[in-house]
Length: 173
Image (cartoon, rainbow, N blue to C red; front, side):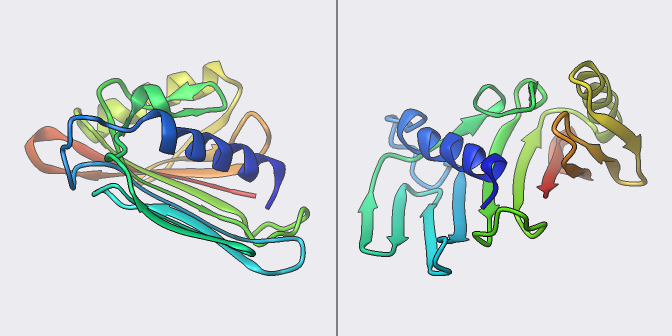
C-alpha cells in the first residue's frame, strides 16, 4: 500500500474508534473496509459493518467484535483539504492496496449521500477542489482529475431520493 493509502487507512481506523455512535442506531452506520497485502504478500483486512460489527484479519491477529455503530459525515472526511458537501453522510469507505509501493492498483472509494442535487454538488466540488490545487475537469456524470498530490480521481454523482444525490469518490494511484 502506498503512503497515501496508509494515511487514508489510518484516518479510517481512527474513525472506527472516534466516530462511534453511542445512540445505538443499529444498521445506520457507515460500512468501512480495508483490504491489502503485507510486504510479504499476505492478505490483511479490516471491516466495520453498518450494524457495528468489526472484523480484523491480519497475519498473526484476528478479531470479530461488536462495537457501537460508526457514522461518518462531511466533517469526518478530508481529502487533500476538501471536505464533503455539508450535511453529507458517508455510507461506505473501501480502501484497497496490494502492498507494493510503486503500484497503481491502490484505490480508495468513498460513497456518500448528499442533501442536494448533482448540479449543485458539481459546482461546489469544482470550487473547493480548485481552491486546494486539484486539477479538475467536468465529466458526463461528475468530475475527474488529479488531487493536490497528483493522484487520479473520479467523482461520480447519481440522483437519489427526495432531492439527494449519491456521490462516489474514487482515488487511485
